Image (cartoon, rainbow, N blue to C red; front, top):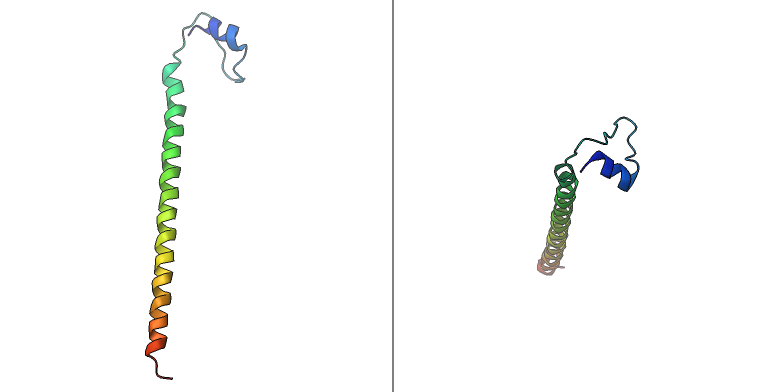
Length: 80
């Protein structure tokens, strides 16, 4: 994309440090690719983390249930 085309479409780029050269051709695809893939990686990571928490929660519920049953069995075996 030419710098001139960018300025015509967007007017500004909100970066006080860099200057847009109107005659220069800028690569747009490669810089735009990183945030798109990074967003995908973050969503996958969150999904895996969420699934891990669901698995851990189910495991803990099962463990508590098993321990409760074990405790009930122990109470039944004790002579009162």
